[in-house]
Amino acid sequence: MRKPLTFLCCILIVTAPLSAKIASAADQTKDDDRLRSCGTVVKEILDVPDNIPQDLLDKADCVLVFPSLLKAAFIVGGSYGRGAMSCRQGEDFRGSWSAPTMIALEGGSFGLQIGGEATDFVLLVMNERGARGILASKVKLGADASVSAGPVGRDWSAETDETLRAEILGYSRARGLFAGVSLEGSTIRPDNDDNRRVYGRRIPASEIVLSRRVAVPPAAEQWISTLDAKTPKHRQ
Image (cartoon, rainbow, N blue to C red; front, side, top):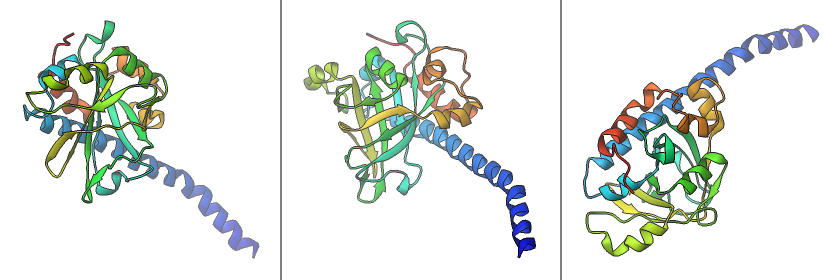
């Protein structure tokens, strides 16, 4: 009886590191796919002028993207999604777009799926307070930061007052439909484990986004280059 048990233990000892490496490689692939999907979502949305108003995009300090990689990626009720955030670098968020920090969105029951279809989310962080809050630890939308549905289209002047008061504007896209959405009651936080896999070491989210010392990973190049092309200058 002892010999089979000893043999089994030996197999487990030998295969455990290999299994861990395989799991880590799979997670790395998911992170890269998520960043590529962020680029695809941003490009498709910003290529349509009547989606996010250009004036709002030019005033945003940061852009968060939660792409729907799979239909099961987001769950209605007790919601959980993963995405990434890029901010304008430099003094007062006035520079070029940064390498992305991986982000998790949790809580709230706000209809992440419409008719069974997964939904893409884009959030605009409109001021420094909201940006630094997310980078520091965790922001609860509606409590730590005011949040509202972002106005869509060229004619959004009627909603200007509400828009300017909001720190975070939310947009969603499902089944080809694009609309503003409120994520009040949800929380946003840096995903430090995903950041470690993407960058190969533990780096604080604030350092990734603000230091100018972290290079954009290849999987995020389309996303960042699209932001640099579509909104190169920050406007007050």
